[in-house]
Image (cartoon, rainbow, N blue to C red; front, side):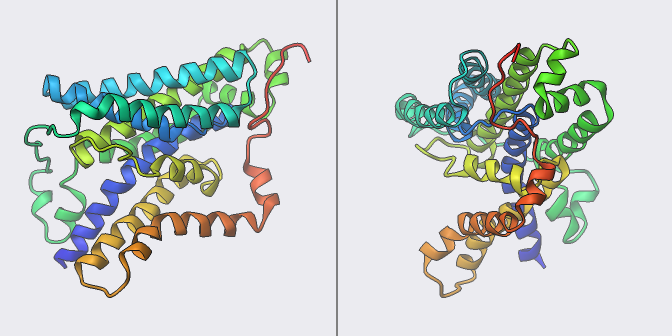
Length: 306
């Protein structure tokens, strides 16, 4: 029973990273922008958050620094693709490569450093319930914050006027522009907000999830988060569910290794990425289903006056 509780807890912890980043990318794509630079933004945010936490001793300041780094990189991406009409896919890939190189360079002096003892969180009373307590009630507040974020974003997109405008910009920017909405500014705001969430996910990795800095420590989570948006058909609660699914697969490899399962470690390490590919292949069998749910202007530039 204890092993099950530990596996569930690890799944929620790992899924939180994917959920926060995936929700940020969903905001981007609901506005019609595809940002392939999530991996780079998360890496830069990870080193920014870790360095800030090391020098200040504050996790909160580390999260703020990570969000700021992600938002700044997203803003640069937004200016390029929204105002200068550069190709979204090429610009996103360039951002990802830049983030990987920049974070590796800046993080050289932080490789051997460690953050102090991490505070432990627990719900009084609930944390002591057998199985349920260790599995669900001993997590960092951001684990619960990811759930609240998914619920809040669902309300924002489908129950608020601002969310309706954001979706309209992603579905038909020409119509939104004709009604007087500043399409480019709305898209830039969505891109910056999405970048800040990716930054928060990156900072969570280096400050809480594995409180240290290692080059390339995001390890493909940005790409999995990007795949989550398609897997979830651009629905926040489905992003949350998918994040826990992929987080569970990631943690399962360590659980199986710990249990001494005789499978080559390389195969176990492949599980999260292999499951991502399998899910995308299965979804792609019905392209019409994706088209129905996908924002109509996703990845397409907007030229006012056309």
